[in-house]
Amino acid sequence: MEFSRRMKKISIIIPAHNEEKNIPLVYAELQDVFAKYAKEKYVFDILFINDGSADDTIGAMEKLANLDENVEYIDFSRNFGKEVATTAGLNNCKGDACIMLDADLQHPVELIPEFIAAWEKGAEVVVGIRNKNKSTGILKKIGSAIFYKTINKIAEVEIVPNSTDYRLLDRIVIEQFNRFTETNRMTRALIDWLGFRRDFINFDAKERIHGDASYNFWKLFKLAMNSFISLSLLPLKLAGNLGIAITLISGVAGFYILLGKYFFRTPFASTFSDSENLAILLLFLVGIILMSIGLLALYIANIHGEVINRPMYVVRKKKL
Ligand code: UDP
Ligand code: MG
Image (cartoon, rainbow, N blue to C red):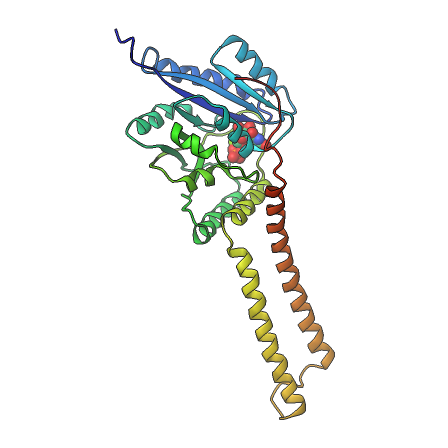
């Protein structure tokens, strides 16, 4: 008998937004996985985060929590988004490691043993890599391809394509993650930023069983935009450089036209009338200025969001 051997605790973190029907299903599937480890060296707990669902997701969570002492939940006062919900899970989980997965069963729980095995072999972060998803729309696919190409060109951290939020984090990574204070966040980018020893596990994303994906193209676009401006200053520099280039070119062109008008007979200089020249020039410059201002506004909005330092999320009730 090994009384002294401490069981390792693994927390399963599940953010949920309108997943009333999926909560009992994901719970049941997890029990099957846990059963395989019965009397082995792990104990599991499940931490659900209800991210301002409009349906009775919280009811489903409470029901399970009443039946099973290893089920915990945090109930947000409203929808704060998956990134923040996951963060709340990481802030509050107690395990020696945690595994984050989606409530909609798109992250196959059968792979949990593989995540744990990789962890036991020394990986501090184990990242799930999605192979493909038949139901993914063409717009989302193209969007994601462009996103990874661009962000890896401009960001300081390498972001592995198709890496998902289905991840295992060691306690040391969780502790470091909990030091981040920014509210506008993309959890997986922050985890990548932290570094640590990583390992990868490939999986096929399943179809969603109940409910609709809450992330449509525009929500994802917003998320991508957020990671661009929080991970890189290049867009800001781009606007500046573009401004300089345009000013130089239009300056030279203007000078050429002036020369043609008052000093020599240069070709083409008199093809357009003065007002046409001016109109084209103005339109062009106004476009550039607006673009630059738009980009600046994004950064200012970002700075604003961080500086006012609001709490990241608000909890109605919890069982931890
Ligand atoms: N989710 C959340 N808050 C939100 C949107 C989604 O907690 O505002 C949860 C959702 O319940 C699911 C996971 O995040 O467990 C992934 O969401 P979804 O299936 O909508 O995204 P996708 O599968 O398209 O990445
Ligand atoms: Mg999903």
